[in-house]
Length: 151
Image (cartoon, rainbow, N blue to C red; front, side, top):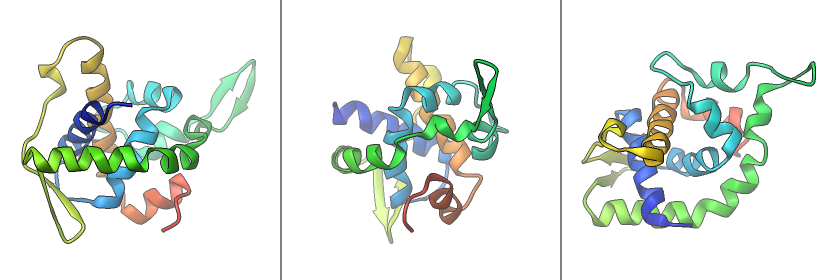
């Protein structure tokens, strides 16, 4: 539980989102990235990926097809558990002047590129970057509904 590492992930997410982002969306980042199954799916993401294509395609387990949304299982519990860490991470980014907040929107002041990193950290930031890309292609309300978060 390292808020400095989490702030790097949020910064990667905002770099992929590439526009002012509603503050509440930043709280969705850590629960998705810290879940191994949902993060594994993000490893296959690209510029054309959408939330529906990543998480609604069926899984086949022992010749049984199940909903791809199971990759997001326990999202709400993780969301509640990780809220404080997300707040700390945003405060870190704000204090380091890497982002600013205006009218409940986060504005990224310093982009990062996952290609500038090596090893496993590069993989983590790549996943966070493409989560930002995916989130940028849908509305905040649709994301909340998809994830089952009360709007």
